[in-house]
Image (tube, rainbow, N blue to C red; front, side):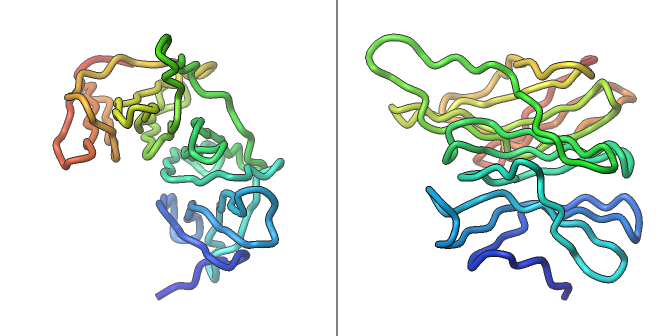
Length: 199
């Protein structure tokens, strides 16, 4: 068993990516009564060959959690989750030196009837190249209906990708490959959604 950083009073590691025996990232969340507002923030930690050490993003995302991480190299890593107390997506990129927050796709709030977006977040990410990254999750609205959420990075921006799924679905995991081009995403109830085609 290897200890993780514990900067808060309650901490969790939600995902790991290993690029080498001395380059492993663990991402998650932490909370403490000493933090303002909702008392929670993101946690990103790096294995240096001996121990996991926290590598905070600047500015630190408060009321947020990181749920998934994927990387192609030590200078190209993506982490995804939620912020604003679970109301918005959170995406950040590691360039080998610094974590930088990157705006996600624009998710419209459903119109009419006072329905407002209540909860939106990304749960997993799969990076195939610098111009082909997939992130999945779910959007939950005030009527408690879940909707699958798929975003794609083309090297410049994140955009929404239509995803066929049963009502009440959210995506919890994703795996992608280049040859043949295929995307597999695991839904909330354990079913698998498949997409074939290029990003």
